[in-house]
Length: 461
Image 1 (cartoon, one colour):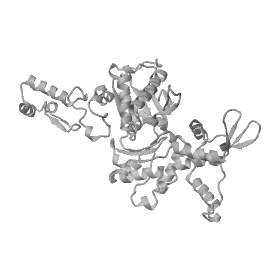
Image 2 (tube, one colour):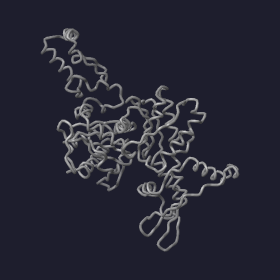
Image 3 (tube, helix red, strand yellow):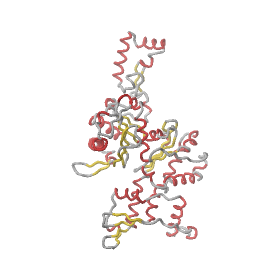
Image 4 (cartoon, one colour):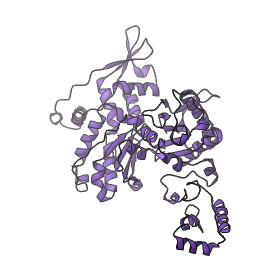
């Protein structure tokens, strides 16, 4: 059992809030200030004993994904949360880039295997704003696989302006691994030093994550330029007199491998591995340019307010110096010819949410799930029989899916609606025409007897 049984609004037990990230999953209960557990988004296959990530099954057979999710959620419920899944609603914080097949299979697992009362898929960028009490912001999620920027204005996501690049923790790991194999040495028990590449061919993902979190940081923009100029001068690309004096490298650190071997990590590796986030590619794009491009693509009357309400989330944003470097990049790029003519606002401002960047979307979900709105915005297991896919939160065609006036916004099918309306007509003794006229005269009942279903393309009266 959990530490204490919590009862939510209406006598229900508090809902379960889950944020399934590419690298880590945050899970806990509604109304709490932090997740109960942060676990890797991976599961061990019992047949082979191999540990696989959930993202590896995004585009595979749904039967395989179903089996993997069953094992993952079983571990979540009965090892970490210690609750009966049938007693509590579920809120899932999802990203814009989550495949539809993954959402459908995840809902199927919750309803068919764990028999939860209801499930709600909420956009993580929207939930982030709940932690700050604002309804307009430019939300930047710097995760493991990619960086995603989505403007939100007056509570509505500006989907035509979202930007994304495959820059995140994985990109840092690849750069870090290549630098370690090329420059680092290992001190053996006998006192000799051997190149790391002579001992291992690849570095494990867990070790790269540990080295990144413990030793790496993001340097300032001025220092980065000095390091780049010194490197270019060493290669003969620029005049050494123009490069100036290279900065003093950070101190090297020692990282234990297996007790008998010590990995020596040069100071230059600690700062250069994170530069991949801010180095512009062939299309002159980086993490900082995503924000500027998203603002330019947004309506002109929203740009100033978006620039003054930046919110940065994601585990990669926890790197020391990341926020400071991001502000330096934004202020410098804004003055470049590419952006100066299109961006005329004063300055950028970054909010400081009441949680670590990697837990901000989860905290927003815990806040929302503690309100009465969860019951009206969730859907039950009957929804999976209404169409081929679970309704998407950003689909404008689903605005009438939760029909007003029919059993408290319960999702219903067109045949069910027809039967309900026929019962209303027969009980009142009015036909379709008489029902409309009656509604006009009294000013009541017309909303309950006329329903338009845009999802099916039909209208019934």
